[in-house]
Image (tube, rainbow, N blue to C red):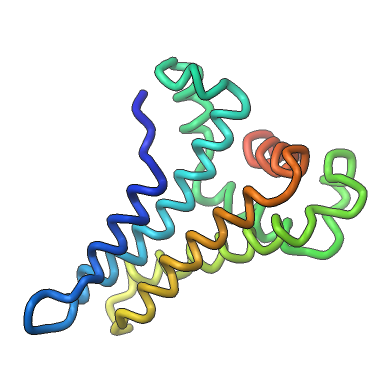
Length: 169
């Protein structure tokens, strides 16, 4: 399996907002840029989870694809909403480290939630007119969120990824 490179999706978003000669970027390009920024973050999560549970050296296996494809947008959204809270929900307490998810994971979760909302707006709502600044902010938020996810200890990242792949009932 060839995974989508999250950096390539974010780079694509940056290319889409470059104004054409003699004008501004088209709405379709600005909307696709916001969407690509979110998808860069989303595929980053899928890759991190599959790398964690199957291994980076096994990306070509069906088991890797199974873990990669097991995560959907709703699962990510639901976990991110919970991870933003100061105190984890009771059902997460056996797995979450004593101090909770920590500020980096919380910031990542907040950014992921915001980007998902922006992606829905860009992909499905015909009303708003997006600006180049809207797209730049989404791209910057995606890049920042990925850095924030990589900042805490491996254990904090593993807990988040485990709860993403195996949400407790």
